[in-house]
Every structure is written in C-alpha cells, then in structure tokens.
Image 1: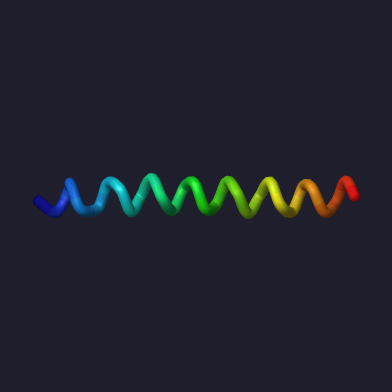
Image 2: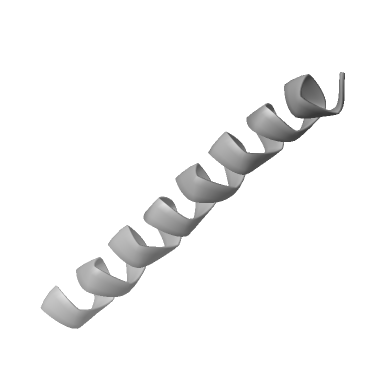
Length: 30
C-alpha cells in the first residue's frame, strides 16, 4: 500500500525538480 502512495509522490517530485531546472536554464538564456 505504501509503495502505491509513495510512487506518485516520487514521480511528482521528479517532475517538479525537472520544471525548476528548466526555469533556471531559461533564465540563464535570457
């Protein structure tokens, strides 16, 4: 049960981290 609850949180965390990195790269390019 815990794995099913933890998996979406893990994927969401990776997505947020990726989005933040993209924002930083975008600011550097600007």
